[in-house]
Image (tube, rainbow, N blue to C red; front, side, top):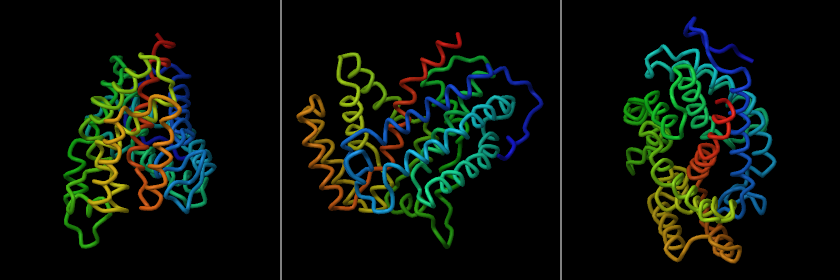
Length: 301
C-alpha cells in the first residue's frame, strides 16, 4: 500500500476504530446497492442489466478491494484538516488512483465502482476532517465539506477545450451535464434535498427497506442528468429514462412486492435500449451510506 500523502504534522484525534467503522459502512452501502433487485438496466441478483462485461461477483470483489482503502481517505481527511479545503483534493487523487488500480485488479479490468471511489472517497475525507476539527458529523455537514474540496472542479476539468475531449467534457459541451463532478461540487443536492429525505420518510412510514430503496432509485432516475445514460443513449435516451421513471413515481412508485413487476418491465426496456443509470446507482450508494452514518457517530459519542 502506498503511504498517505504527507500534508501536516498535526496529530489526528480520530478514535482508532473509527476509520474502519465508516469504511465497513461504505462497503455495506456498495453491497446493498448491487444486491438490490430488480434495478432497471443495472447489474443485480437477477441479471447483468445492460452490461455484457460485468456481473454481480465483479461488484462484490470490487467493493471488498475498495473497502480496504477507505480508512486511508478518512485518515487523510483528518491529517489534512489544517489545509485549505481546495488543497485537499490534490492529496486525495493519488489515493483515489491507487484504490482504482486495486479495483481493476480485483475485477480483471472491469470498471465497476469508479464513480463510487470518487464519491465515497470525498465523503470519507470529509468525515475525517469534521472529526479532526471536532465539528458535528451529519449527512449535511459531510456533503457541504466534500463540496468545499471540489470548488472549481467543474470549471477546471469540464470546460477545457482539449483536442481530445474526455467523455465527461463531451457530455458537458453537448448537453450541459456536469455528472459526478458537478454533483459533488454542489454538495450532493440530489441526495440531500431529494433522495435522502424521500428514503427516510418511506422508512418512517414503515415501508419495507428494499422497496423504499428501489423507490428512491426511481426518484433519482427521474431527476438525475445521468451521464452514464447520456453516453449510451444521448439526450433522447436520457429523456426517455427520466420520463419512464417519472411516470412510475406518479402512479405511486414501488409500494408493494406486486409493484416489482413494473421494474422488471422497465429493466427489459433499458436492456433493449442499452441504457444503464450508473450515476443514479452511485447516488443511491451515497444515500444509503449517509442514512446510516448516525450509527457510527452515536457509537463514538
